[in-house]
Length: 139
Image 1 (cartoon, rainbow, N blue to C red):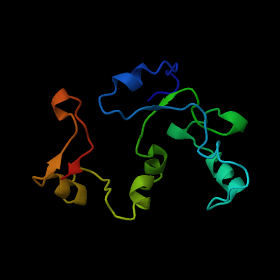
Image 2 (image 1 turned 135 degrees about the vertical axis):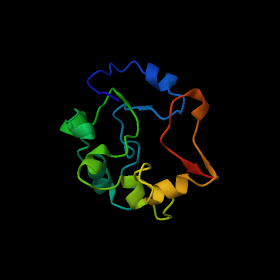
Image 3 (image 1 turned 120 degrees about the vertical axis):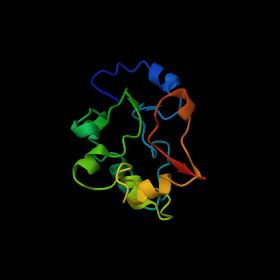
Image 4 (image 1 turned 60 degrees about the vertical axis):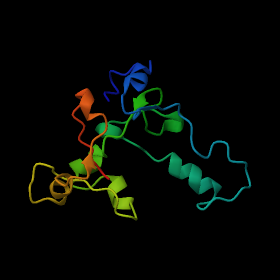
């Protein structure tokens, strides 16, 4: 996704063969929560959490209230490029309590990822479409 080029037309969402793109309308998950209903973090804490800065691809993107996110743009997972640049793993890998998500260099034959994708029970979604997906699924 190139947020500088995105005009918000959403054609890429329709065209994505994986259904992986979404549109940022600027809403928050707690927007419709009735006041007085306790949440795990508390109402104010949940709202504050959703408003934390989210600088994808290393740039600040305008959002209501001055926070950062590409409101009005299409979005998709980019495997937390900002974390990878700092030598960290993507958030989905570090937070998965079942250790169901792996991330690494598929070209390094000694890596766990390369060993796992070399097994016969591996598939890639829509590989036949010529999209060269780099996400592998273990069956």
